[in-house]
Length: 177
Ligand code: QAP
Ligand code: CO
Image 1 (cartoon, rainbow, N blue to C red):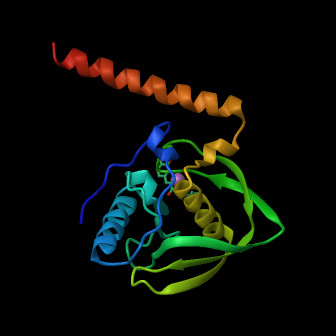
Image 2: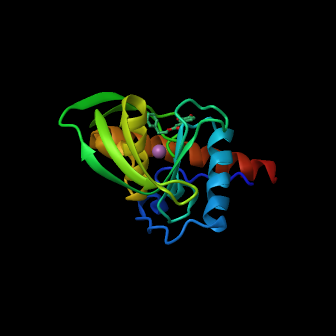
C-alpha cells in the first residue's frame, strides 16, 4: 500500500476523462488499496482515481470515514436512475482543500458498478452517499464541484491557489540562500 499524491485544483489533469476498467484483477485491487489509504490519510469521504492521476474509472467512498471497515468501491459506475427532486448542500473536495460551498445534486440515485471482486452491484442511494457518488463520477468525467459555482467564485478560488503557490516558492528560495 502507498499514499498517492493528490492533484490540486486548477491542475489540468483533473479535467481528463477516465477510461473504463477492462478487468478487475490484482492490479486494479492494488490501485483501490492505495486510494483507500490515501483517502483515509487525508480524512476524506470519497476519492476518484482521476484525483491521484490514474485515468481509470475507479472510485472509493466511505461516508462514515470508518478507517477501512465500511467502504464501497465503484468501478465503471453508471447512474441508471435519478430522482426528479434535487437537494442543495455543502460540498468539499480533497483536490480543492479549504473550499466548501453549496451544490445542487439529485436527491436520490440508482448506480450500477462493479465492486473490488468484479461483481456487478446496484446501489440505491440518498443523502450524503447520493451526493458523494455524483461528486466522484463527475471527477471521472473531468468535472469539479467548483464548476457549479459562479465564475466570480471560481476566479476567487483560482487566485487563492495562485497566491499560496507564490508563497511556497519564495520561502523555498530564501531557505536556499
Ligand atoms: C466529496 O470530499 C464530497 O477541503 C469528498 O481541507 C464532499 O472527502 C461529497 C476534505 C462532501 C459530498 C459531500 C476537504 C478534507 C475532504 C477539505 C472529501 C479538506 C480536507 C473532502
Ligand atoms: Co472531489
